[in-house]
Length: 148
Image 1 (tube, rainbow, N blue to C red):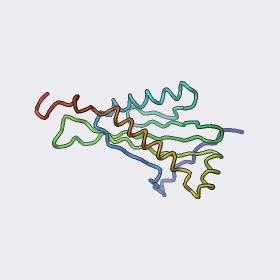
Image 2: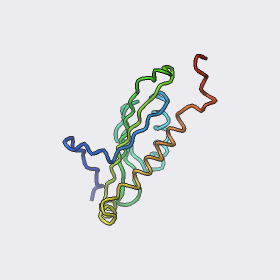
Image 3: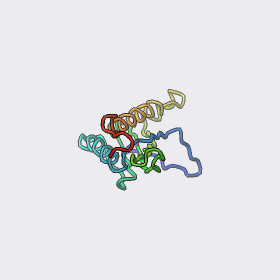
Image 4: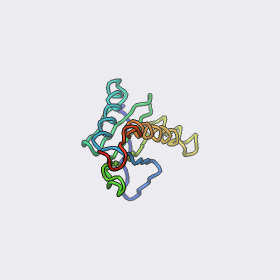
């Protein structure tokens, strides 16, 4: 029996309850490097597989959480227009779509009355917060306005 695959998204139903997005004050290429470093730890351990990557914009990763439970993370990195007050500080939006799949997820979703996505969304929100903390400069790294 083959491994189950996540369902393909239906463009007619743009459901966003399985998406989180953070604006991160860092260049797109720096966030991409940090994200890829983290993903390679999972790939090296055999629990993650990079499905598709288009540097530095798109990264799709399947994570195996155990027998019968996997999660697909679809990362989209989009450069944002620089703030008017701080044009020298680049910002990037990092959006992640989360799609758990497998028999264990289906069963958990039934038992929890459709709330099987909640723990995965909490985990991705914490992951984005950690990525933001790692990518953004600390106040000591940022020069005062007008100083280069």
